[in-house]
Length: 324
Image (cartoon, rainbow, N blue to C red; front, side, top):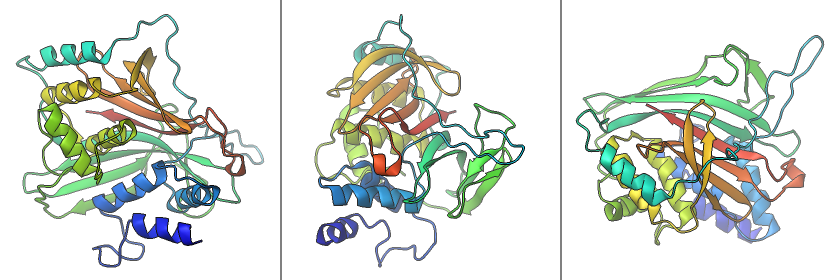
């Protein structure tokens, strides 16, 4: 119990002196700390159980499994995504070659520009001790205005099955909602923070690494796993321009154990080059547009089963697909 309390205190996403209390929304810093807690894999069975339990309570990204809702006269409505499959006859493109392509693409006059805000489709898992895991697909659009204010719209939708009901779990029993159901619609007052990830990302690999280290609240040199998490944090705040995508590609090209595996088609039907990293009990796949270096998606797959939670090796843990 002492170890569990220590873990909670050190990773508490909502400290007593923080700006959010009770059941209010987490700020960006709190979300990052909670995500780091959920993706780190502490030693010891008790700490593993605690992390999975927190994932269930918060209903945040964890593992995607199949859930079939059935009843009299109904058919299965929601199915978890399967892991993306690399095209067997495709040729892997080294990250350095992709980074060179992206750098050339960034010099074009009509190259895309950096824009604050994001448009992301995600599939994630909610879990509990006494119910099967459930896959929760949703789409989030964040738009910033000139005065520093921004809006956030979150809807329940699954582009793999347009028009079909979508599963939600808002703390009670899982239930179906209509495709496009508004989960939340919020407006935020002006914010002029100059700390990452609110500040603009730099166009230099070394400075970008330092930026991601600060954005992820990491106090030592970023590991490959932490760097991939930093990419997710960055893309959940910014839609990168061509220069920023090229800089990120150059940074990733120098990353250890991130290996090219070939071509994949992502869950939005886009073709990209896949790069994989094997962690402790999981595998992450980064999908990038081969000519521009734009990050299309990031998938996490479980490689070590957690039978007590219904998690099997090969289950999708979470997936994000970023759009312009």
